[in-house]
Length: 283
Image (tube, rainbow, N blue to C red; front, side, top):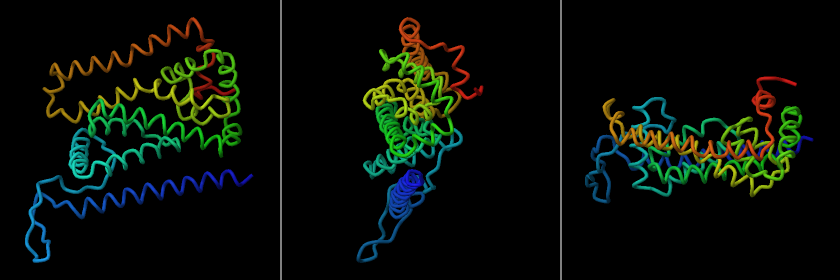
């Protein structure tokens, strides 16, 4: 009985330690190579002074809480990425998969940061891939360690979701897409309960990859836009307005198509079941 929780705890501890070591190593590289304000650093066998190019002062890595912090963090990471692109991408990927694998909130902030750091299209491709990989890791962890825990603490929700999955088994992939675009249940709970519902791993992976792309697109575009805004006037520029329009279309079109399909082919009973799956009503 204790082996599964102990195994999960061991995996979590090992993953946390690996992420910390990676961030600490990259942080040491930043402090060892960067000099505040483009100053002078002593080095070389003869002790000659070496000039470093101007760069952003070192600050601990943390999530931005406002526009100014987002711009500063993105600028600092872009400068570091130019010097050590592989290391910067590795740290971002590790942090993203870690959060997704253990159902830790905050992936939307990483999506915004990806847009500011890598740009809208590279950031979107990276976040979509990492979302799918991280959700798949969560699926596998739940399958190996968490089935009994999920059923024990959420029996009514699991039973209700199981019934809806069985009713839509013939068009399961589109039902999964519907759940991602119009979440009747939180994404983290769907990731954890998917092995219990006997959802094939391949369908689960691609439903996450496709179904969460509109959401990832909005977050990544937001980060790209915010990182480029210097004043309030820039918000009302044609370039920014067109990007905002594109975000609105990306959010509305896939959802509209899936919803039309669901009305014809899926058995949802949204009015009756949505409150239960969202945890606003108990059975």
